[in-house]
Length: 208
Image (cartoon, rainbow, N blue to C red; front, side, top):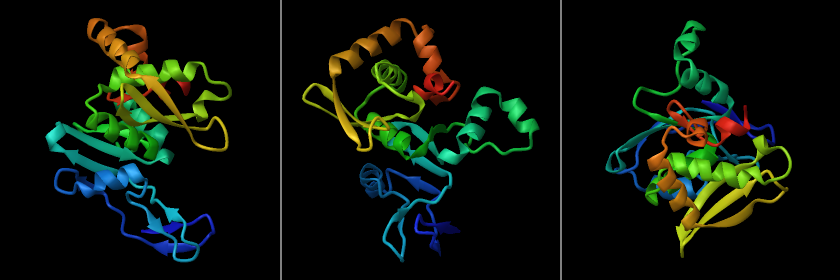
């Protein structure tokens, strides 16, 4: 397929559309480094990522992920919230049955890191919403993605608050309390709000 760089140069690439993270564990490192499925522009050297769906299998973790490009966000959400209506429109669902959709590179990074750390998605997304709730500005433009878990803290990347990417640290205890609350009240208002069918994200609230 042909992609276009910010410098307006167009060039041909062969993007990855399916990967097994157990067989190709090197891709986990590439996802964390932000180079997964990226191609350097031969003219200016900028990393360009094709806007294509990637089907990811991770058998050792018991999960299948569909990485959906940001431009397909609303198509993906339409199938998550009302599949029958979306199918009537003639559109094709961007993720397969049994796959968990994540939208954009930030969400893919976050999901890989959280699965590796053994964190549950719903309470983690609920915690992100509470963190984001105190932020200033347009919350729909803020990205918060798990970087690592160490020394009793969760470390998150945060972008969209200022021109530069930031790092914040949150006590692991806050996540553990949220996870404990989730086990007791899975139908709680906050937990239900971040989980829209198979798509689970704090963005289900902030982008309404």
